[in-house]
Figure 1 (cartoon, one colour):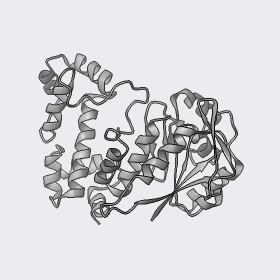
Figure 2 (cartoon, one colour):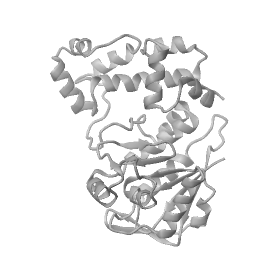
Figure 3 (tube, one colour):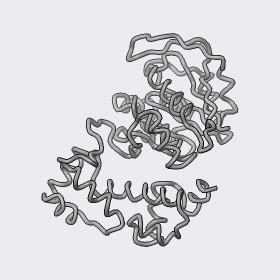
Length: 315
């Protein structure tokens, strides 16, 4: 069973700590068996905080050493003014050196940076602390505009609820889209937002709405296999291309063509996981037109080839 160790360090953010516990513990395989063993690993009894206020004390049967053999180690946020535990820094460096997966939520990125895991890498954290992370660790390419960054074995997320998106993303990577969708339903969460979506959001994906962009997005989703241009989408929405782009950014946090690409990639992943269609049929059904274009976008955005992806998730 895949072991997920969540580090409970002093001043751990209560919500950040709870997110991976809930997501991974509520992920089940199709045969109704748990997909993950979840361990909360603490150096000692620690104080969990909500904002800057002490919230409750955390004690666990697992010490930090129980994280050494974990497949995934997650570092929730801690107070940004608190120096990370040297023992925890050494631990996550050892896990990364042996090929384990290490992820952070919110200001947990400061711990990963202190371990040197983010040097030369793109990373994110809560937008309020992005400048501080960049100043403290100049070798890290800090991107304050995204929900999470996946560098393969090293992942970082923005603050608070973005941790849910990151954890569901890891479930999708491990077990596929269907398992991630089941987990999202279990935790009563909308389908996963893409990592490149803007952090500071006060909107939701309006597919299904009867006003605004809802009908246009529904039409785009129903026509993923059709070549669509900005002019086509603007014509359908009965507005100018400039107005469309502005309205799209305001309501979805991304551009029309990026939204379309993300939906096409999602369609391709689902078809690779759940059907025996040829690559040519999948490329056409997902709107990529050719296998070469499908491979290009898969390599860039998913980090693997369609064939390897199918072998992993169908196997």
